Amino acid sequence: MEKKKILVLCTGNSCRSQIAEGYLRHFAHVKADIYSAGIEAHGVNPKAIETMQEDGIDISNHTSNNIDEYYNIDFEFVITVCDNAKERCPFFPTKAKKFHHNFPDPAKATGTEEEVKEQFRQVRQQIKNYCRQFVTDYL
Image 1 (cartoon, helix red, strand yellow):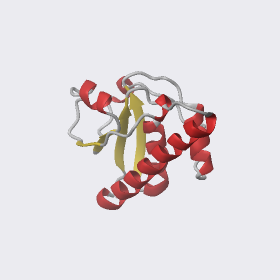
Image 2 (cartoon, one colour; image 1 turned 60 degrees about the vertical axis):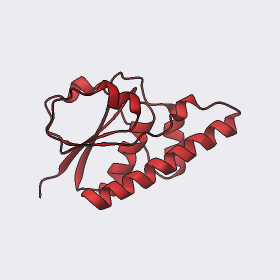
Image 3 (tube, rainbow, N blue to C red; image 1 turned 45 degrees about the vertical axis):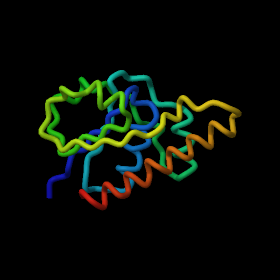
Image 4 (cartoon, one colour; image 1 turned 120 degrees about the vertical axis):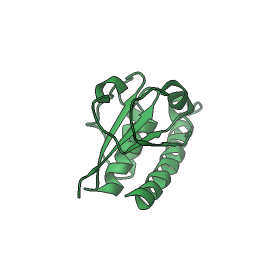
């Protein structure tokens, strides 16, 4: 069976889409090839790496990619994980089924170091639940 190709889109490809890529890879195992990209590439957020390590998933070797790098790939699914990406990516030329879920941006978290970490953990859990359900429903 051919692997499905899934693209996760966000604004900067630094937090939410990276976390989603990590969980989709984890839950899909060999059933899919997972890519993530942003309208801009901001680099992978160190706190996103740290919060995923807490859950046993290593995204430290992920790269931050611009959507332009993927125009030639035939995706089955495109998942936007923030409203900004959904609004700014209407012209991605694809026959892919599009999904959208607006997760809060943990990079905008404020407060003490512990409060910021907690907001990252909350978003991580939301994305984890979403990705697990997505894999169950579509793969």
